[in-house]
Length: 78
Image (cartoon, rainbow, N blue to C red; front, side, top):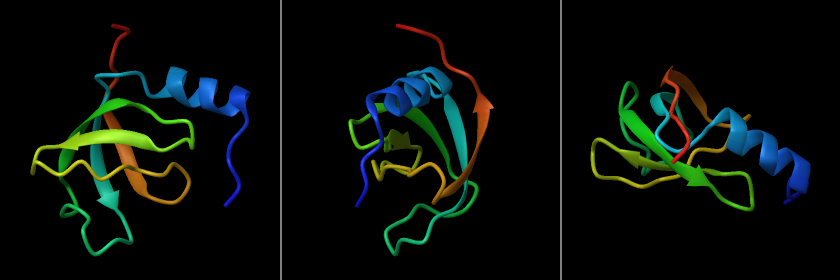
């Protein structure tokens, strides 16, 4: 597994700030929430994964470039 650089992590944190609302379009994981599930970004970890609180109660992270999702509403800084 190749970890992103510090600069890439910073860019991800700017693109997906805490509070950003996302819709899941597809994830190749047997524990994934159903397609169309809405979630809220809680942050970006040091591996570049998006920490998400899904409306189903799941907390499965998104991996940009692997999982398919769209931003529904951009979050703000807190």
